[in-house]
Image (cartoon, rainbow, N blue to C red):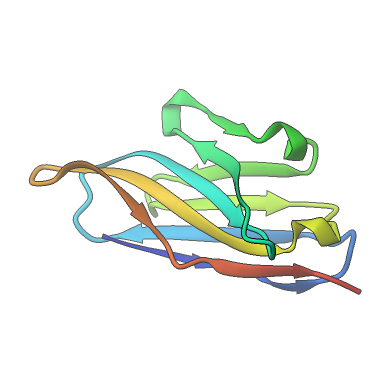
Length: 119
């Protein structure tokens, strides 16, 4: 299984970005997908989770600016971020908990996509 993130880049304060995370490989079911971010001072923060039909949730501090969604056909999760601030600068990466007949449910991590918010 591979996870590939995309959509990061340099954006001005107040701007928006849409990040994507696509899972590929031997997948029977994706139980949930998460977004995390690692800040320049190496703090890892939970951003959002999409659990498919069970719903989704976003970190309290980001709920007014961030939304998460998933295209189950494409095995792709999206993170929409609006009104970006310099403190949103981080490496954004995804985790997917995936079930396969041979491995059971396993966590997989992507390599991340860099988001830099600066004027």
